[in-house]
Every structure is written in C-alpha cells, then in structure tokens.
Amino acid sequence: MYLRLLVILVIVFLHGHVSIIMASDPDPIQDFCIPNPKFGSIKTLAHLSILPCKNSSEATTDDFVFSGLKSSGNFTETGLSTIPVNPTVFPGLNTLGMSFVRADLKVGAINPPHFHPRATEITYVVQGSVYSGFVDSSNRVFARVIEQGEVMVFPRGLMHFQMNVGKKPAMVFGSFNSQNPGSQKIPSAIFGSGIDVELLEKAFGLSPKQIGTMRRRFDPKTLK
Image (cartoon, rainbow, N blue to C red; front, side, top):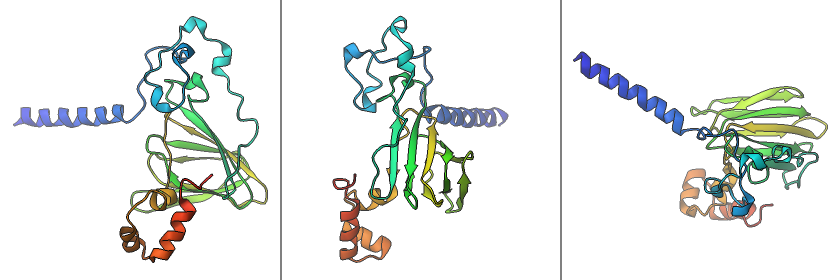
C-alpha cells in the first residue's frame, strides 16, 4: 500500500514538473544564437527553430542592440500604437526566452481586451496614467490606474486591458517571458474569425444585423 502511494506521489510530482517545463520556452544550450543569414532571414517566428546559429565568433555588438523604439509606431483607430520586439526584428533575442513591446496610447485611447497564450507580461508605465487590469478564471477583475514609474503584471493566458485616463499621451513598455508570447484580441477573435452567426446570436443576444455590424468593424481584412 505504501509503495503504491509512493508511486502515485512520484507520478504527480513528475507530471507537475514536466508540465512546468513544457509550458515555457526551452532553455538555451549555448550563450546565444544569432540566426545565420546565409540560411535566410527570419520572416516569421515559425522559422526560428530551423535557422542554424552563426558561429559565435562572428557575432558583433550590433547583434545585441535594437534601435527601433525611439519613436512610436502607426496608430490604430482606437488610438493605440504598438511596436513588438522579438527575434524577427531583433535576432539577438533568439533562444533567450524573452521579448517586449512599446505601446503608446493617445488621450482616451484603449488597448482592447486581449491575452497572451504563451507568456506572462510585466508592464511598466514610462509616462502617463493608464487604467490597467486583468480578469482571472473566476471572472474577478483586478484593475486600477497605474502611474508613471509603476509596474503591473498580467498572468499568462488571462485577458487584460489598458486605457489612457490621463490628460496627456501615455507610453508603456511590456516585457514577456517568451520570445513568442502570441496575442489574441477578444473582439477580433469573436467577431472577426468567422464563427457561425447563429451561435453568436444565442451567445450574445444580438440580431443578425448587429452581428453584421460587429463583423465589419472587426474584420481582420479592414483592421489596421
């Protein structure tokens, strides 16, 4: 009986640890891995696992410096600008298990509810006042206004959001514990993905006309 109990405990222990290991980016097996341009350039994150590293003796300081965050990017109709930084634009991050983003919000602008399936995010407010928060799996909301110099964490896989509630433009930096955190915006996932209209009618109590309006608004072909 005791042996059986011991075996069960060992299985539970190993299952928990294997799940933790598999849930994060793999550990690097060298100091760094700058993709070798001789084998092609990084176009999408899907290519990262098949591009060989260039010889470490050929690495330069420039491989580990990124200068693309000096100004904001293009703004969406919601007043949001984001510049994601991952190995596709900053090869020095490859295999290091991290990435980050600069986000600028005009006055009153929002970062719509979304989540990152593969990473926890830590957000630092560089300037402004940003109403930020997330919703846990029991639908409890954790939200407050965070000011310049403050930090908030969004646990992996949980829906979170931001809104500039200040009188000036806001800027935040987000850091992820994955080089490919993924991002799925809730409105676009629901109304811009082609889910059956009848299901949406029953789920949200909307008419076909209202759903059509929402679909046109969140159609990925028209979103910028």
